[in-house]
Structure formats: C-alpha cells, structure tokens
Length: 310
Image 1 (tube, rainbow, N blue to C red):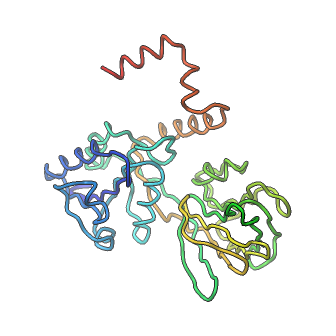
Image 2: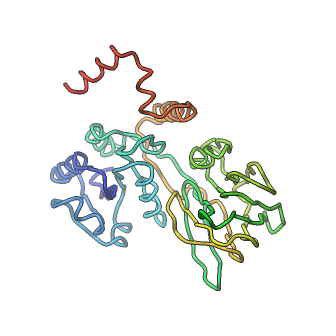
C-alpha cells in the first residue's frame, strides 16, 4: 500500500499519546498521509490534518483505531459504507479484535506499506427499528441487544423468521450476535461461540423466565423480526454495547446479516487466533485478572516486575 491515506480514530479518554507520536512521525516521513476526525482533534494535537466525518470516510485507505474492541468497532461502523481495512492497537483490557500493542505500531506501519498483511472480513447485523411511525437503521458488528431497564419489568418479544412465527421471549435481555460477537454478551449469557468462518447469527435470551429459553442459530439468508410485546414498558436498545435508543410495546426490529460489512487488518492471523482462544479460556476462570496474578509464584512475579521496570 504505497502512500496510503490513514485515518486515525482514538479512544475518548485513554492516554494514547505513544501511538499518536508514532503516527505523527510516520506522517512526517512522507510515507503516507494521516487524517483525523474533527471530533478527535483536541486529543491528538498538531501535525495531523483534521477533517469532517464525511470527508474522512471518503478519503481514507485504512483506519488505525487506538483503544480497545469498542473503539475498533466504532471505527468499523464509521467506514461501513466504504469498508476500508481497520487496524486495532490495544489500549483496552481483554481485546478480542485488536491485534497489536502500542510498541508494535511502527513495525506494523512498515509492513502495511510493504503489503505484508492479510485482511479478515467481518459480518454485521443490519437492523431497522420501526416504532411510532419512525424508522431508524443500525449496524452492529458484535451484537444488538434489547435489555430491561431496572425497575421497568422484563423484555417480552415475539420472534418471527422469514415471516413465520417462531416463538416468544420473556427475559432480562435478548442478544442477537454475529460470529465475531458471539464471544461477547452472547457467550456470557451461555450462548455458543460461532466459528468466524460461519455466515450466520445467534439469538440468545439472558435470564429467560418463559418462552424460548436457549439459543437459536440462524443462517445468513434468513431475515428475522422482534415484535416487542405487551409487558415491555421500557427497554434499552444497545448496538455493540452502546445504548442507542429505547423500545417498548409495539416496536418492531427487523434484522438480517450483512456479509463482509467490515475488514480487519491481520499481521499474524495464526498468533491472533491462538491469543483469542487463550483470552476466551481465561474468561471461564472463577477469578478476576488481578486475582489471576496471585496464582503466579512470587519469585516469578518479582522477576517479571524487574524486567518491566528495566
């Protein structure tokens, strides 16, 4: 990728100065052009051209997202109308999507310029909310969730697939997830992990009280609908973990899978896959990450701390 136009998306609060400095240095070397969104201008400082979102999405050849999986998902949604590749630099915690750490960014930029990378396609869920005469469209790369608000009762919804009634839910939440998103809320709710090679989606109830009480896996070609039923006074609608609206009795949400809606840069797909499996297995351990450290022998912990300090 010679002389690429690289877009920069940053986490709203985390200190990403190390990677911004690396990118500014790359920009000054003349190997490419660096663009940032006007919304991120104050967090980035000088030395980077700042443009409006529409200009950003029209011009970039690649996006570098500095943050965790949430920042990377936001970058993918931002460029979804023209799905250019997205490279994630990890400033988060677990991070299933992000691949590289901040010290690796300079080498990653050299590999991108040399064309030494792979592209990993990602599916997304297209959703249309129809309620009160209004229609709103959403795109979810991980999941779309209808979740109860505390004190407002449960979520009740009828599921239809291809226009045919399938059953109903009464639960704390209903999660519709892509294969990539199946390792997130769906997995925490006891749903299955879908292979990234699978074109489909999974619907899983959270704390079901009646109706469908287990996961339903749907093919890519199947369109489905949630009709928010009587008894749902107020529920939040979440897209990739962000609250985007509210639903109640009478709302309808039409869903379908959009294949290859996004593209992720992979520098070492095999290593990333191994790391992801380890991270997933760690989530099953009955300890928090800080408690996990206590399982390491004290002499080894001290050695690791000395190496980090040096």
